[in-house]
Amino acid sequence: MSEKDIIRLQTPLAVEDIEPLRTGDVVRFSGVLYTARDAAHARMKEAIENGEPLPFDPEGQVVYFTGPTPARPGHVLGPAGPTTASRMDPYSPLLIERGLRGMIGKGLRSEEVIKSMREHGCVYFGAVEGTAALLAARVKEAELVAYEDLGTEAIRRLVVEDFPVVVVNDLYGGDLYREGKERWRRSVR
Amino acid sequence: MRDIEVGKITQVVRDLCIETNTRLGEDQLQALRRAREQEESPLGKEVFNRLLENAEVARRESVAFCQDTGYAVFFVEIGQDVRLAGGEIGEAIDEGVRRGYEKGYLRKSIVRSPVERTNTGDNTPAVVYYDLVPGDGLKITMLVKGAGCDNMSALKMLTPAEGVEAMKHFVVETVERAGPNASPPVTVGVGIGGPFEKAAQLAKKALTRRSGEPNPNPKLAELEREILEEINATGIGPAGYGGTQTALAVHIESFPTHIAAFPVAVNLDCHSHRTGSVEL
Image (cartoon, rainbow over the protein chains, first blue to last red):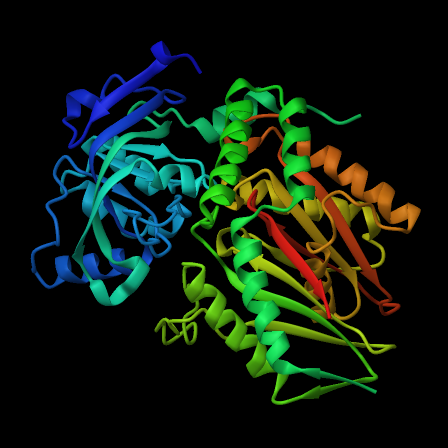
């Protein structure tokens, strides 16, 4: 991957930042990411239903679906790769409607989430699961924001530098998983 | 009779937990390197580069190479001439897991029940399968089983008439349905035969075989090769971004079954395929 092909983005994001992105683009994030996975999403849904404020304002933000391992002394964060995004499908539209601009995870998203992303302006990025130690090395600060009792599932505010992702679902119906598979599929015999 | 102190078991289990989670096995590294050579997609090749680099960093820094440090699954073969002394083996294994996951800065991912989802806080209980074998040895094999890929596993009760073709189709279909969610390149454990639960257990055990080592039965070894080829033709590729290397290995384990039955279970493991073994 040559350096000139890499798109560098500073978070939080404006709609104009994500409009030029296309499926398959290689992106490096610098700035803030919020971690949240299953249990944190369930709590945020509850908060919304009860009319309570969310732990962070989703407007312009990027959520990273991950549950890190405990940090060794001297490390900012333990290894933290992406978890399967489809488990967050029932919750994601609630945040997307409130201005969320990006999600980082791995695996397929539902039609409903993809529709919501295109409608409100949000891009789904893939990080490579199984590169947890490399990804954690790009995290410069980590601060607990909410739901401490959830342990690894708590919401953390990360400050990252050159955090590597690939555009999976862009704003125009592109889908890296579908397109990649079609491109490389072949018949046996 | 030979006495084995269960305290010794706690110690080796603790070390296995740390070792297996922080050092990717040589067989798995070789499988990844070989697949990197064969991968035709540039983005796919890049994914392999990153996986191998990650394994190296994890080894150097003694950190987990995947944040999902999984269920701690153990296959224990106990010689029938062994007497376990000083305590209960199940507790000894759990204590080893408790110490290993704490000392190794590994994630605790187990909740008390699917209904009451409170974290047990120490990654116990371990999942342990015991086999009584002849002799006075004791062998403990660990499989660190991530949930993302486990979630994409499946079991089907085929009929004898549907046969081998349906079995092959079901395995490939399960990998296709899993797509990127199982974090390819996957290792595919297939269990055939026995009643319902036997097939599932064999599928899990098949994952503990050295990566790519064929089944000693030539017919089953041939099926492993054929299924691997079909899986790699799906185009799913590394990380699901498209490519020619979707699975590193297919391992089939078989057990006799009923005249009316052809059970098949498929247990998927992600690119962080983690096994380790110790003999006492």
